[in-house]
Image (cartoon, rainbow, N blue to C red; front, side, top):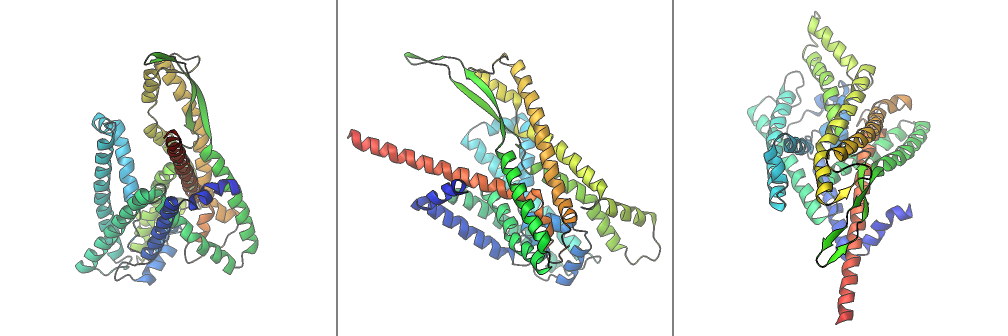
Length: 446
């Protein structure tokens, strides 16, 4: 434990890194404060009824937003529009050569792609804000007044909230430690943990709380093992001429991450699986006063029963989609042909495989196998998020759906971001040690 926290302890002793840590803490405090600013004119009684009738679907979605949706805060849309925009542009780099060439143009290309990603995120935020506001204003929900001024205020507030998160994320990235967007999601999940634990204690679920802590420890250990796990393919580089001398061939390795796709497949899959159940819930809400049940009402009841976080049909579909998206997103972030071409260009060769097509086929085969293991792990984590409350017999809390936080999805994000922070700190410390050594060596030579 002490070794794991060593970069944090050593970093605190370095003035520059301490200033960065304090900035991140200040940003998180600001985020939590803004999290409690609601949209104007919200009918909180109707909002509570909506969450109670959603069969835990909205609570599950709200995990990634730190509880902003339950409060109908200005941050209710969260950072998801930006994540969606980023994924779209990642896919575009595969589908269209222009975007791929732009991405390879160095700093200019990266800045251009980042700018387009932000503009696309603003567009997605506006669309989602309009759809959400119209839904909240509908007679079926009555959460917001059905007036043009209320509509305009809500759309502007939701859009401004997401833009604030984008700005805050960029500030954390440039003036703090690690990736700012990851930090915001991390802060949203961690901010709900004390409340969730408090709900279990107040409900008198002492035994369940002990079991929950045991699950926490076991899941964290598994997540750390898999997130850091990688398959290392040995690579040998041929001798090369450097100026007037011949440089000996070097041995290295090609690291392939076991869970390279991280939490993205789970986010994709849960968006698709929960969508039919949520639409069915809203349809039934709009037709709850009907005296005679129509065929569509019966069908909506069937969909609501089968596509909720506690139904077997939804669970099977969820696991299958997580597996499918794991393979898909791994293919998006890993261009095996480019990897093979780069090895060939720099004189690298995998022992027993000729450069070019044979190397590409071998890397593909290894990547397919480890992606299967990573997909099974992600599917297990995803299903834990749904089934652990039932297995552990946790009480269904009424204020934040905190029992859903025991699952692996949120822990995967928390542990992944925590490891990223520690690795970033470790790199910063090594860089400063090297700079200090270089300065000392320079003084000695003078």
